[in-house]
Image (cartoon, rainbow, N blue to C red; front, top):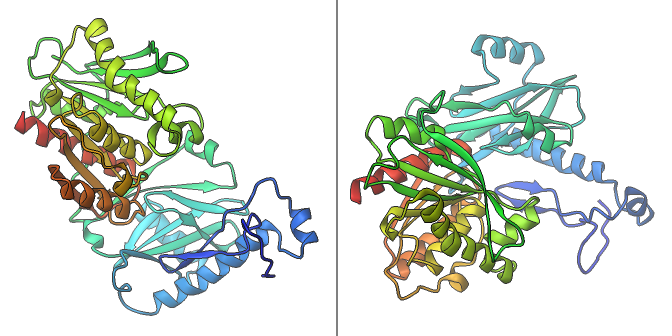
Length: 407
C-alpha cells in the first residue's frame, strides 16, 4: 500500500493489529475511490482484499502449529479444504458448523463478493471455490463453548439481521441454555410512556409474567434495548424457580448515535442524564400509576448488554437509591476510573458477565476491578462464548435466579 501521511488518517492508510490479525482501518465515508486513486491510494475494495489475504496467510500458518498463543482464546485457521469435502461434511452434519478437534469450521454458500460470519464470532470468510465460503476458528476450552452464528452475504448487514437465521453450536460441556416458552401465558404490552425529560414519549415493551399482580415477591426489571426476555423468564416463573417478574424493555433511539448518546455517560452528558432520569425517576412512577406496582430498590433491577450494559453499570452507580441490583453483560463502554462516583445510598449489587471470545471481556473486567476497588459487591462470571444473545439470555436468567434466592 502506498504510504501517505495525514493528520487524521481519514484515508485509512494505517491498518492496525488486534489479536494477531490486521484490522480494516476506519475510512471516511465521504472520501470516494476516485479521490483515493488520485492520491495514489488503493480503492477500498483493494484495501479489504489486501487485509483479507494477509490474514488468510496468517490463519494458514496458525493451522500448522498446535494450540494457541499465550493468552489467546481464539484464532482463525485456514486449511486446504476442498469443495467436495466441505459439501459432503456439511450434508452429513446437517449444520453449517462442526467441530474438528479444537477447531470449529463454518461454511456458507452465496453468490456474492463478500460473506461475513457474525453473532458470537465476527469476521470475513474466505472463498473456497465459486459460491462456497469457509473459515475455521481454534478455540481454547472448546468443550465448554456455545457459539451462535449466522452469515451475511454482500454489504446489507441490516437486511441480513432483519431476516436472520441464527443457529447455535454447543460443546459437550457447555452450559445448558435457557428453555424458551413456545407461547406465552403472561402478557406483553407495548406502551408509550410520557416523559418530561425526553423529547418524546418512549416506547416500552412490558412483560407481565403469570402471578405478577398477586405476589408480594414480584421483581421489576428495567432492560435496555427493548430486551424484555419474556420467553426465557416465563418457564422459570411457571416452574417456581423465579418469583413473578415484570420486565420493562425500554427502546433506544433509532440509530447507533442516539443509542450511544443515551447509554454512555461520557459521550453526551445531557442526553445521558435525561435518559437516566426517565429510567430512574419517571418509569418507576409510571409502573406505580399504570400497573399499581411499587417495589423496593431490592426488587428493582437494571440490566443491559454491550452499550446497554454500560448504561446499567452507570445507572447502578448514579442511582443506587432506585436500583438495588445491576445485571450487566459484555460491558462495551465507559471509563471506570473517570465514571466511578459512588453515591451515599447503599451500593447496588452487581453481576457482571462476559464471554472469553469477545473483545468486551476486557472492559467488563476493568469494571470488575474498579467496582471491587470501590468496595462494591460484585459477582463476575465468564463463559466460553462471544458477543452473543445466547450468552446474554443465559447470564440474565442465572442472575435472576441468584437474586431470587437472596431477596
